[in-house]
Length: 429
Image (cartoon, rainbow, N blue to C red; front, side, top):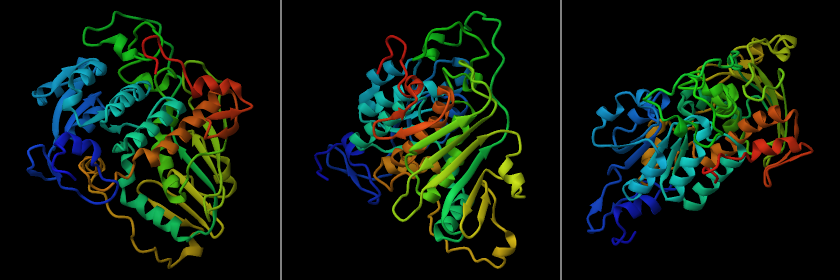
């Protein structure tokens, strides 16, 4: 790398693609360690945003942005050197030259707009799942990151759990044979919140218009924020968007899945505004090299699933892999090969997946030229699209063949408005 390249250019263009750590140089020619601190801006600093912010304290926190002073809590006093903003657009316009990387932890509907603005400016990005609110937004984010050669990481933190690694190793060793079907699920019945009946004055600590952002205008209600937004279609992606990326990360990784080519989805009566209390989606994936086609069933339900009862399988965990030689039942902490009698004395394959130094640390290190982050958008983009594809089919009233290249839902024109949504005037992409 030329010694004429300054620190900011090095961080922007000299990032690692898994090629090992680099030693960057500043404009004065003095060598700089890859441990030099990044200048990070955080958008959304309450809740999960606070966890992400606290995980970045090894770096320089130069800007903090949140539309809710109460939700932001004491973050501004904890990081007194960081400049405070309500509007991410103003923050990026004013401080773009001072920022190396951006962390986004906003509600789902406000992921893609700040993400794309930051990435188009050449900023590395850490973004919370499910990446974005619609498939087209996810695809744009993935494409921009690739075009700009940026370091990205989606907030699928359970990717670092040791048991997940062992499951992936067992599946990829061929222990249960050829896998053509997987059941994945998350329990509970959250969704369909009560319709608001009172619309009080917007509290002084909240910039309501900025919180609404890209969505159409509506009166403020505490039933929407600070948390219940997740179960309103204008803002969130329901329990599928909330947990889908975490749970499906295991089969995605183990089976090397990419884009689905067919989807079906069902559940209770569709509500135009609110996400359902249960939902059932099936995705079909084509063969991948020597790996056969896979049918993956996603279930968000607190009811027993018929397959488990019919086959006398304990419904525990969050994933069941069905292979030609047996089955593997697992969650983030546990794993069990079935039928147990067939696997007595089974010796697990040698450990091959390297332990993570820490999920967010992966991203920080990669931004400085280190090994690529494990949940970069090349991997997580197709997975996040699949999660939202289930929601899209449900809202559109049924399944369809899916062309991932053109993002077209064959025979289901009602899906188009969910695939490529319109944004509020002034927020168009």
